[in-house]
Length: 457
Image (cartoon, rainbow, N blue to C red):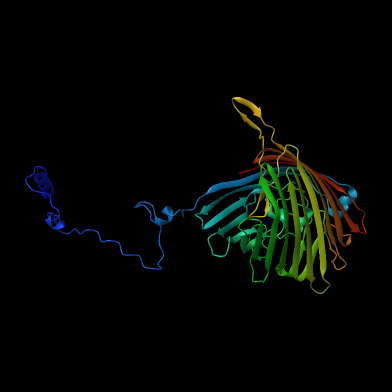
């Protein structure tokens, strides 16, 4: 029995009265030799950084207990296309014999994740046609003061609305032919800001111009670009089953072309199914302009009123040609879509771009029940004009429109129908009539029919 136990026994039996002062208590037994009580923690120093009070943990490192261990989530998309072309003999002589195409337009596999509230990351590779090409490979730092996100890596420059909208959510199988004036993906760094109510966004970045389709850019040339985009939502409502918005915005980019040459459609396209990141239109002329600099312009607007939506953009470029006058090219598109089944287009306010469609009655079937729901049905139409004609445009020595002078003007109409089986699967059907009009040649329409089965996760 310890001294404390004996003392308590004496008190209980009345043999001795209980102590009333600390000095009356028996002394504590001394610690065994070589052992000392742990020291008290030092008092905090004013102004010193603090670490949140965390439960003792000898197995997990501090970063994991603070929620800084990177997370990972698989992502990807599969788009299987069949595209058939109808051309006249004269059209083949003017722009080349465009072959039908059957295969994967996109076949991407990747991952994404976060590092607490400090960063996020995306890594995605496209292996359509058996060639491995990086698509989005970047880190977004989200804890820096004064910034919503600082994005570093290989990603789309902040420019057009249809460029900012992922191919998972675009209304038609391909973006408009004016997408040729969108800078698409390059290596760079960009800051992103948005207001607290997410009704306005601003992005500004510096990029290495001339990144090839394999995601590589090298050399000592000063081919850099500064690109910026500003958007606003003067109207946004998503309550009581009513969704409506009006999106407006603009973008600008100043660029120094790689090797001192601005190139559009540098080679004849033999297959209508182009798996490039931002494919050029086969219905516009080949352009190779020696230039010291180039400016890109964009104005964008969109409106959604429940199942009905409208979208339109104007693109323009001024090219400071070396040894000759400047070249100005421009064009626009307008489109409209309507959901027969009552859905509406989704919208991401921090990206200022359209997002996923939430299907009200997805097509579902289980082994024990028949199929229920029908999915969502969307009808769409788009009209585009690309004016790639200029008195200062050098004549192409060969390739499409080699027999034309001063370029061409493209008139293009696309009709589409989309069947969304659920939020992640859809079947798309498109018909396009493209009519390039070049001086010295007749206007020759080309008819293109396409079907796509798309799945993403």
